[in-house]
Structure formats: structure tokens, C-alpha cells
Image (cartoon, rainbow, N blue to C red; front, side):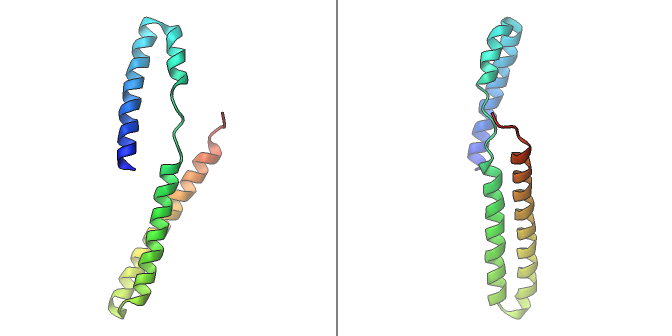
Length: 102
């Protein structure tokens, strides 16, 4: 996911620089470049949320099956991971809902 995000960042930086130059030289051609900007894919946000949720479940199961001394810490870590995953999934859902369809 990190590699994909870095690649997209570099591609957008190059495209944005090209659009700025096109606006100065030929404003009509900039419209064609602006249409090439792809909408941001939503899957990385949701994927990160699902990974955090599944990690929380796995840590929780491991905590329940572990020794009593380690159980409390594992369950706390699982709760934090679950809360983080649910927050990320809620954010991804909210952004997807608020984004107009083309």
C-alpha cells in the first residue's frame, strides 16, 4: 500500500506541475490535462481498516487463549486495534458517501 501511495504521489506531482505550466502557456490545453486526473481510489482506506479489525480480532483471540498475566494487555491492544479499524472504515464509508459519482 505504501508503494502504491508513493507512486500516486509522484504521478500527481508531475501532472500538477504540467498543468500549472499548461495554464501559463495554453490555458485551453490545461482542460484536457485536468480531465486526466483520476479520482482517488477508496480501497486503500478500507483495506487498512479491515486489516486493523482483523488484527484486533486475532490479538483478542490470542489474548483469550494466553496466560492470565498477559490477557489484560492483549485484550487492551485488541480493543485499540478494533476501534482504530472501525474508525478507518467509518471514515472510508463517509468519504465514499460524500463523493459525487461521475
